[in-house]
Length: 388
Image (cartoon, rainbow, N blue to C red; front, side, top):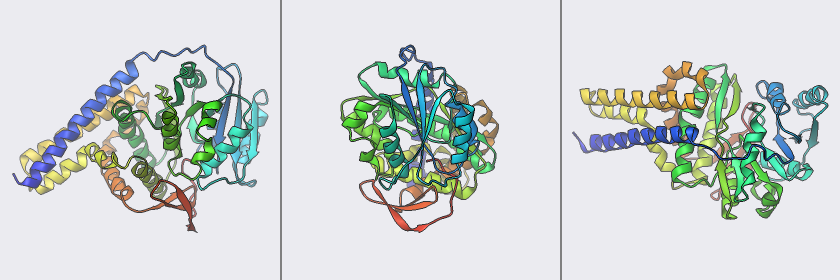
């Protein structure tokens, strides 16, 4: 066995151990008792930054208007007064007139359009507890009770949620759904355990207005690409805990194209690179299938390397299958045959994310700076469907 083969085998075994440990942590996370007072129900302002019409946008918005919760309001924010999503929001206001649903046209504040919208919406909010959520998310009626409840503990400054891919209509969307639940979700649970919970995710961020003001509001992160990460890190710097809820939000994917998925996932990868540069190389341990295939080629297709490929595939399928069960993402199991393709795509995106400074976000192109801030590029692309 050559030195390269020994190195690859060492990395591969470490990768197997990583995924087995991740599976154990996922099991513990979804089975442990999350002691939260579900009767803690202060009034809530839901902040929804929006640009364009996502897949099943009306149904996504409706889910936030059907909450089993005493008092809340929903505030939508757009920058363009001619945005095609505005008629959808007006339809929602008509159908749910008993709920306070407002639409705010917000001016740009910084390079990060989503954070700029959130800043304006937080200024318009009437209540102390703020719930910020991306526009393509869908929730169940118990959502608000479950995500707000942890704030009954004054030591918790921010509650964030994992998410799962739902309703994928194309192959690329199915590959993205596989990544969300089969790769990203268990990795988040591992990061919660070993890397400190000092980050947040756009699926949901719940916080007190007073704590948000202490860190400078959303305006403080309005020029950063990884605004959610910055929000969590700055809240933790205040001495407050970031709590990972066991409520899993649905990210409605619909029909996506390869380029839409590529731009979005490369942006995510570069977010990770600038946010946690020391941990970014460690993501190599999550690439069991690609490592096994490289070992297979390097060994000249030896029988032991074929066995390593088989073990890698079995472990990845087992972890993804189990995680989908814990996360209630059973329908995505039908696409698990594509998981090896998804894993190969993941390593390609990891490589692309490790270099370059250009990111595309909702049709706009930005240049990423060394400190994680971004600035608009001259070039603009016709690109419609990405998460905000």
